[in-house]
Image (cartoon, rainbow, N blue to C red; front, side, top):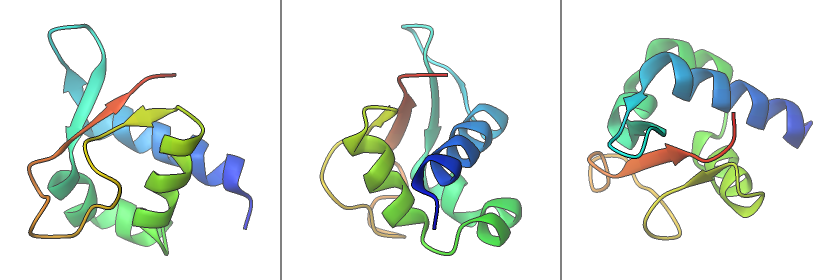
Amino acid sequence: MNVEHEISLLVREIQRLGSKNAEGQTSVKFGVLFNDDECANIFEALVGTLRAAKRKKFISFDGELLLQGVHDNVDIVLLKD
């Protein structure tokens, strides 16, 4: 698995599904990303890709791990385009 490629796909999907927040950054709710059919087809391990992107400072979100249902309303904010 090529982590950089996965992160670039994630950035593209956040741009597609997200909207600009008050600071002008693109943001999307975890539930929207998780439940999107295209994302489901692209990412085998969405949560792992999100954690890798967070470690590399491409995105930010509250907490360490996002779980479907529990964290559906958590904002994922794109830090780098």
